[in-house]
Length: 94
Image 1 (tube, rainbow, N blue to C red):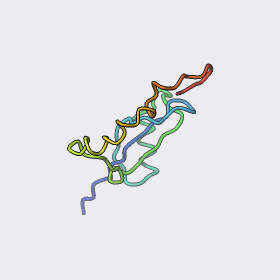
Image 2 (cartoon, rainbow, N blue to C red):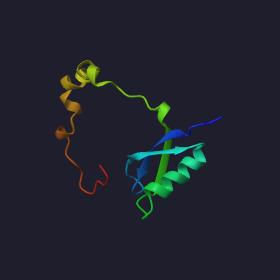
Image 3 (cartoon, one colour):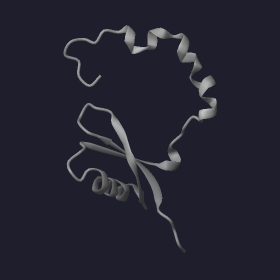
């Protein structure tokens, strides 16, 4: 039987305290292999401090066709926009 490996999405945290960012994907049979493949492929030069791998089938996304109705409720709440807040001195990673 020809079994194809699972696709895993890879997220890398460059430094402690920063958000994880999507780096790409890898093929692997299990989560341990996915972590090793992600490490080998995306952090060869010490680019990260933490790696997350998630099966692609577990990623849920909105669809572009629904963007107007899906994101519309946020437009009438201007207080949620960061332009109304002053950044405190000494704040990091915001």
